[in-house]
Length: 74
Image (cartoon, rainbow, N blue to C red; front, side, top):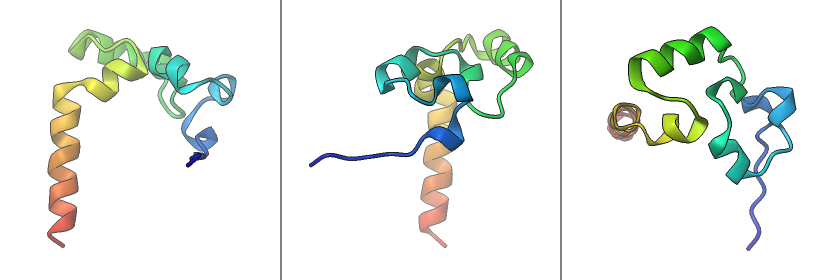
């Protein structure tokens, strides 16, 4: 079954038509609302350079898991 996802609201204009493979390799600033300055801070604090690095970061994954679990308890 084919799945379609609308990512345009999550991405800067120049990245809207990129493949998921390309998005994983894209700089964090490809995400809508993440500035170059934000990206620099994430790099300095957590060594995160790409969208993939951000998505795979153990701290961000742990926080997401905690929030997801808490939301199921409501």
